[in-house]
Length: 427
Ligand code: PMP
Image 1: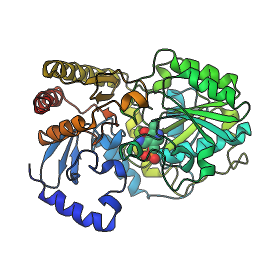
Image 2: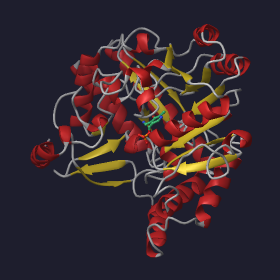
Image 3: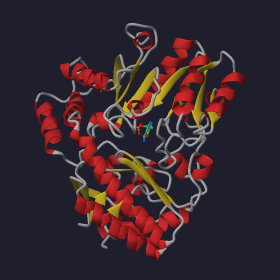
Image 4: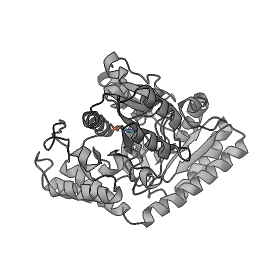
């Protein structure tokens, strides 16, 4: 496989941009080799600058549930751009997307758009602190809620991949108010709440975890977490930046029986443009400026291009058949991968909810960060490179989830299973 052009671009990028990338997860640090510089994407495929083609399971880390350059999304962006790219004044599209989201997730009575998942989580936490008059927060080890200071404590995603889950540069003060519990352990959260009576503003959770690899919630976990949080007078924040409009139209909160006070969104609702949002209970959201006293703002928030892209994508997703179609594709993929793993004798397992899936190189069932870390990262790195060589682009880390889109065809799935058979044989 030719990589000359990617290597040249990477060398020049690395002189000006730390690590040659604008987000650490894009680097190939954990798997070796040169990050592929992408020339273009079409449907489920990306093409790099050397002309190599890949079946893409990264999909811009989740937003592209309809695949790359979906004609309706591109057209919506182009049309919006013709009328102007940003006004810093309200547009109707913001309310239209707000209404679509609120219909899909009835817990969201009011919403505010921001520019990234990081901003969404950071702002939701400020609001929860103001509303409850409390300062501490609880997050789970291995969950990632963006890179705001107080959230970079035992964080997942790139921070975990690079071995810096609690980043230098975060003050002791910012970190001290962040309490950490293991994922999938509601009793642990309950005891942290009891040990800090009247002090915890919120519990923030990835209802289905995707930033320590793909980890599903145990039966009853989210319900118990909700009950414990509610009993302690704290707010429950569902971080559905990754899962919203992805695992189901109504997100993880439509699949499990829990009701978040606030929800954070991003990725899919922006159709591949920079968007985040947070929303929830009206009485909480009305504390936000300019109605209330909690300050939160953004020059490009609710950007017309981003709203147009998000609306186009969400409209297509609202057709009930879309999720069933991806589900069928996901089932075929997982069945094929499980079969390939079984035949290879390699210690690994695959799991999936909707169009979100993941593979761990360990025999242990993975339920939290500690069990995720039993995975053999060397085996993953070898597998990743062997898959890349065979035209399958996975996230370059054992500790990331994978995604499917409506554009992945049965032939793409078949090709992926074939590649996996060969890649597993290399291990
Ligand atoms: N929360 C979750 C669950 C995420 O997966 C991510 C990003 N992967 C974020 C928050 C942060 O979003 P962003 O990268 O848009 O800042």
